[in-house]
Length: 123
Picture 1 (tube, rainbow, N blue to C red):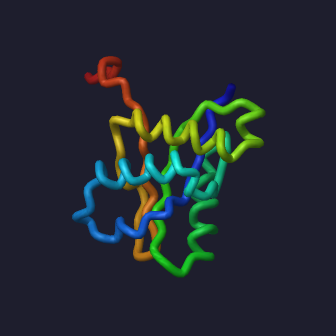
Picture 2: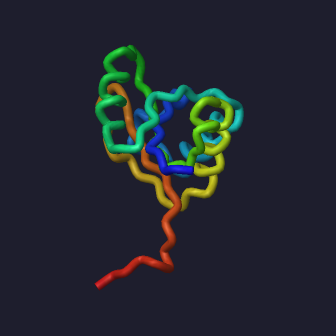
């Protein structure tokens, strides 16, 4: 198993308003992932996913919502979209931190991850 950066395009129409709740968006995203409705935009071991998202956005006419997750995947998982979406749904459901890391008029990119607040070293 190795850790990958995975970017998924979600079939959500919301997100264009800054008043939208991240909690509502994450709940809707988890449901979309469980139903297999997301598209895989990028799977990489490095942080080049941002370029992949920018290139993908150029092909879209409507506002799109993307989510970036760090997921442990095996070689078998990499060959199976259903397995990737299942692990992504588990990851987003267990996330305790979400933030919009990139946004413009055509898209938003959200990071959702599990942070162990008991192991944060603050000086």
